[in-house]
Picture 1 (cartoon, rainbow, N blue to C red):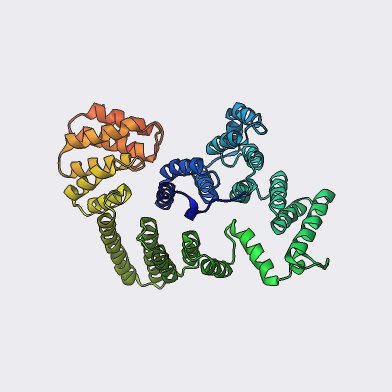
Picture 2: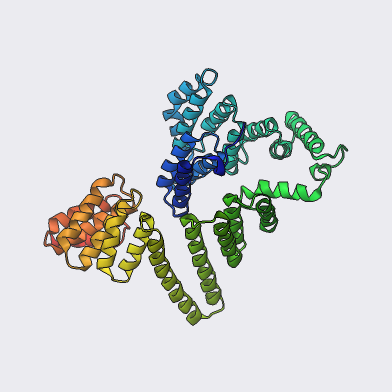
Length: 459
């Protein structure tokens, strides 16, 4: 399969992808998912987008704290879709792959769905896509023998015997007396040895590889999926990648991420500066990453001051951090006035500083962002409340409440504020009904218990 790179996709698709990545970095998972799905549909061979789509899906699922029952229910609900997709494998592999994507959108860690995706990708002559998806899921299937064998087979198909050997090694660890697993491990080791140019069959995998340093690198890359890699060596790898492909922004962003993991914040910022220079233009995604790194740098300094018992120094750094975030929010809106996420962030900075007119102006714009709309309406209401315009504030909360279906934290905040405003406007019975909605699902929310008990005592 010929993979499509970022530089090869049309400009319109690239812009959509970059917006998706920016949304991911800001935690707008839903917005990022929608855009990444569009990118994958437009460019099926653009594997980087498919990988980030899968990562976003997994993060979204894990945020919901899935259980074994979660996967059982998704299997049950997806039964007919899965059967329909399997019937398309031979006749229409692309349609089968689309079906597999729909299944993974509902549960990206369902083994049946992952297995079907691998089958569909192979049928569509895209085994690399299958490998990529399983690599994202591997940390959650580290003791699943069937999963490891499937991934090993795919590695073998795309001529990556060293990685296949790694999977078979894990199978042997889980089933030390499984003769098939042992044979698979030996075969993959031999293939890896031949590919690396070392024809001597002796010792373990590390000895069979011609270059011992390469063995370390392969092992580190395998562990990196689980977050245990030697960051220093991975940084060296990314520097080599950049030297080979200086225009590849993904390598440069990855390098910055690694520097952050190593707490080398200045190096991370320099890597992003170099990325901007290499791109030849300003990039809001890169600038947002730089802002986040500077905040991380402040946090590290604050933690160090506290650990040293320097409370005054920590407080000074806290104040400096707050000032930076405020100024950065203003600068980002100035540079990217059409980015509604930046509008929301600036509105919040105005709000916490008591600049309610300025906050209202930003939140009125930010509410056009689907991912920030309800929170923007919530803070609009809070701003109008601070100005004493209770009826206008209540209207904003009504809009937000009508668009929220689940009683999540945002809806609780909205309903609670509606209750508070109803009380202030002299409507105690209406206020009690709002408070009861929250009390029925979360008795520990703020002071809801005290409010309910006080209301019933008044009765």
